[in-house]
Image (cartoon, rainbow, N blue to C red):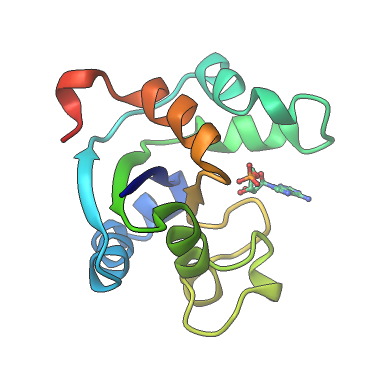
Length: 137
Ligand code: AMP
């Protein structure tokens, strides 16, 4: 059993596809074990994406991630980190495989609907960023 953090980003919330994102994880046998809706401040988005602070897209990404409500969720199951990443598709929607969330819904490399932790260690930090012990199951 592994846990990962996924986030429906502001563009996914605006497109009204929170349920479709969750359905794809559930259809793959994964379970939602934590779920909330929050709006990040710019500073909170900057702390979440601190690993990217030297990248040229850092300002724009954190602006975007704080532009509206997001839906962070804990996703659990065997091989959850990789399964969620496979279901999301490549970061750049143009390179994403058919049938992935980003191929079907994303508009740009930045507004790409969904986030998923890239490793189990990253997931531990990211889950703790949004959820306390009483909020995950
Ligand atoms: P990651 O930590 O890999 O999820 O990357 C963080 C997010 O930054 C991605 O999901 C995109 O929204 C955004 N991003 C990654 N690469 C680029 C890029 N070259 N230009 C703009 N945004 C990007």
